[in-house]
Image (cartoon, rainbow, N blue to C red):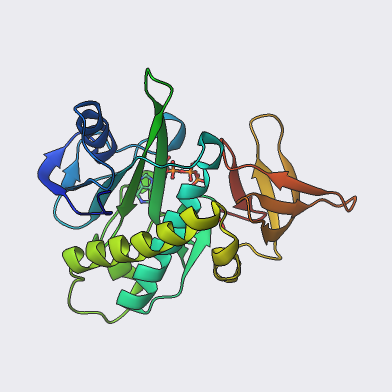
Amino acid sequence: MKQIGDRILYFEEIDSTNEEVKRQAEAGAEHGLLVVADAQTSGKGRRGRCWESPAGNNVFMSLLLRPSFGIEKASMITLVMALSVLQAIRETTELEAFIKWPNDIVINGKKVVGILTELMTEPDGSFYLVCGVGINVNQREFPEEISATATSLLLEKMNEASEFDRKSLTNKVIDCFAKNYQVFCKKETIEEMLDEYNTFLVNRNASVRVLDPKGEYEGVALGINPEGELLVQCADGDIRNVYAGEVSVRGIYGYV
Ligand code: ATP
């Protein structure tokens, strides 16, 4: 079987690296294909939202995965990727990055990475995954609508005169993900990554507001379980398992 990142397609500009991976997959591309772009014209977030993707400064990358595990395990791939990007950022920049469950990386309370995993089913009943990552690397300014919650590695690395090398950061993410994916595939849970994931969970033991489309509520985030669900203890002592699906989590007083 092909390895993660064995084949890389690079684009100066693309609509969305996730969309390109889907086109490649439909044309028969194999597991492990990586699509990288310098800019996206329609970068995507969750629930049809946009990901700001200007040229020249950032990393936009998407991986094609054709897993042998069941469809019910697929949402955990976002968490495996989040841990991988976190490891890559910490090793490359020494910045204190944290995971904002389930799909963002934050530094000093602002979002520096977004992850979007999409599951596509095929006519024969099989499925593939597209795992996309946007990293704000050397961007110095953000549009007003997101300037309060968005940042870049360069902006957070105070006194850093030189820009970060995007190619080596991309390679590092791929290396980390390839290792973590192999570990994940053994037991098909994130059990072995749990301690590390929880260590870097930004809201751990803090009050959070769960923005569940079925009804919002507050509680204390205890950490994630081996299935990747966030455990939130409510005021009545009840512990709710929050499934990543369509849910966002906020700090009580702001974004984190
Ligand atoms: P939230 O971060 O609000 O909990 P989410 O994780 O579902 O929600 P994503 O789908 O990951 O959000 O990202 C889309 C949102 O991120 C946009 O609606 C916008 O607010 C913000 N955003 C868009 N582009 C960027 C960027 N380049 N850097 C940081 N934040 C961005």
